[in-house]
Length: 420
Image (cartoon, rainbow, N blue to C red; front, side):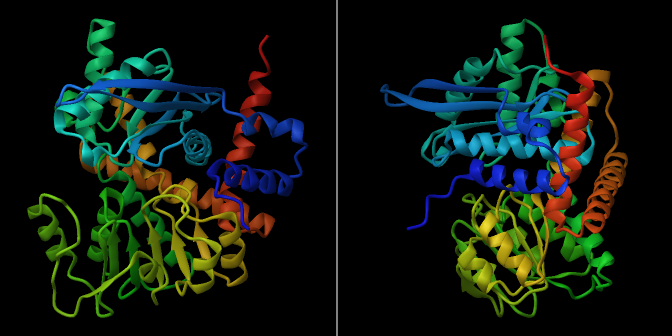
């Protein structure tokens, strides 16, 4: 019987392999195996019917070696400590790959937000913010949106933190509404980064963009943005899916029409969409459909060993964090499927979060074209660093990305030393 999937163990397994390829002694990188801080909090919320319900929340700071911890907050019924630890570690690696002055952190609350009213969600967010208050701050740890959280929730966190401080502190979170210090281009940043990376890998492999068949699992903010932008560049989006199911059309989906449908649908789900030539498919069928590029942009652990055996895509660009298991990675490598890893492919969000933070500190506001140009410059530079390392070590792009990150973190550790 196979052991239960543990995302933190998966991260450690890849970390160990990459460190071995660099020829590092365990003592040189062992600090990366352990988060600096792990906080578990109880969150009492008075519900609309008067009863009090207790939710469990987490905030993990994996590394502050290269700067303040940075990472999103997710609201999901399956959140647990190991998931948050893994996500925090991936953030440390992601920021190092992008070479921006951040460490890695992550937060989460074990809750199904769809079952909460707007008022209950507000109360939950404010109480959670108060509970993690000792850890966060623009110089220490800067949350951002993640699964089931958005700019409105970031605004609540910013306001709660500011009330405790007695003055407005916009730099405590990123991904805020524009009217309270948010940045242009932040909402689309992760999906835009996925688009830039997809175009770059096609270029490196000498493949045309026009007509490239793309399947996108997870049609939330990241997946929808990536699909829309790739469609605009000439790719043929043949499949998309969300928690309600998937849509498939070998001739290409009408992405603009799907987006219009979602905009007018209060549930924001694909279920119920009808279009000429569109077939209903499951998430598994999407992952294994015939396509050139597969973009998993949902949750972790989507591409398992079993799924990997059936994958027909030649390129996978990871829009989600940790969508591919270690076992699946080995299968994909044996099939010569090229995987652009999450810590590179979806780094657009944290890169533009960095821009937002800098704007808050300097009390400036950059225009969107400037932000998108800077995002493209940084993410393509990161791609080149990873590609070159993978070529040098004759390794996969995932190993290349991990090696780039580990080298930068180990160097920072050597420079800083151990206190006291």
